[in-house]
Length: 537
Image (tube, rainbow, N blue to C red):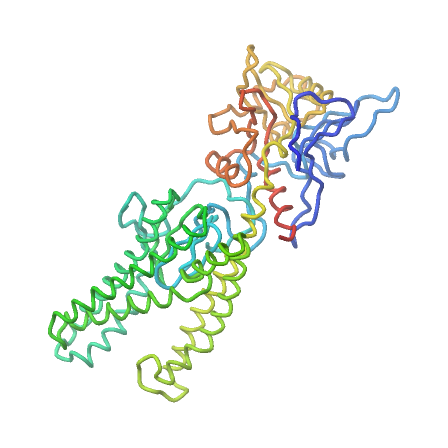
């Protein structure tokens, strides 16, 4: 879409370039209003009114339906507020690029950065999620709503902070303590058969095994992290949780080769650890505590490596398959689609095949009859693993779709035209000037013409009509901080990252020369995002 020339000087009756047309909406979502700035006709209602019947909080009467031509001799309509685009003007800090559809993840992470349980260790970067997947905000998993990442302060890492290797925080989720207790109980029962002389001390040995196993998972995750940092991809955190770990990588690999390497290093390190534990096992006497521990760690790391190499998202093998298809077709989306559907097929195979393999003894145990507690346990474990893989594959598809549409979000086309006013200007006069210029926002400038603040639309809405001649714009403005000045050239993920870094409801958009371009509303970005996501890929 051609970039708008800029919302500086409005011609009467001229439509603002870059106005996007309201399109399909997500199921259950409100229809997004037009995102771009619009010019007002002479004598039209005040800028910002774009929906018929939309009333504004605190307003004394419903907002006008839109610009309409003034009749000869007709009195000028009451000024509406610049920037009001639909019913329910946002309160300060409330309208951020937010999520609106259940089930999708955020960018780079994104938020990037959302977390999901996944078997064993694997990277998570924008574009996928789930066991061993690299995904975004998503970017950044948890239950999410579709939309640009919310502008909010990052909270705690979701668990107990254990350290910061390579500058990346490592957290242990509360669910880890549950699985550590489960491993301690199960492995303790096995030790009772192999080393009955240990007695109650077998549970201390089992606890040590659980900690050592998750230390191996941490090494797997650190392999992903080091590779990501080597490729200059930011890593938000590493988290150890119920079924393993996840490295939250906030950006997508730039090439299929880097994607392949980033996914492969995790299973490779697990294979190396399995070899190290095997060598250690050969060096100690069999049937002893060190021998049993080393054998258990060797087998567990081998299982982690093999499982993560299965070719379906969100496993590491799925990322490798995605990289191969990406290289062949030249399209990252094609790779994601192929690997995600293989991942879903894998989830069904795990659900059906894992209990059958356990019952038949193919996984190393004794053959068992179908029925009893072991069958129930096997089925439950298979169902949990299958659900994680299926969900991760679906999230990978949604994240790929999100990233495909992100370039459609451009600051230049979403910006509302604005008029500069000095701090002592009465609100009624400022609105009159905005209406005459076809503008939808107000920027407070100093005597030299330099912008100092943006007048908040929520504050304008709260001022009754009869008080506006006596209220100056300075009392309704938000002082500009460095993060509230954004370039008109920003687009896609870079735009969202900039807005997320400084939460606000309005931002001043400037040209590279420093000239005022207009005002960008976070609510407009959200509506444009929903509209873009509603379109098929």
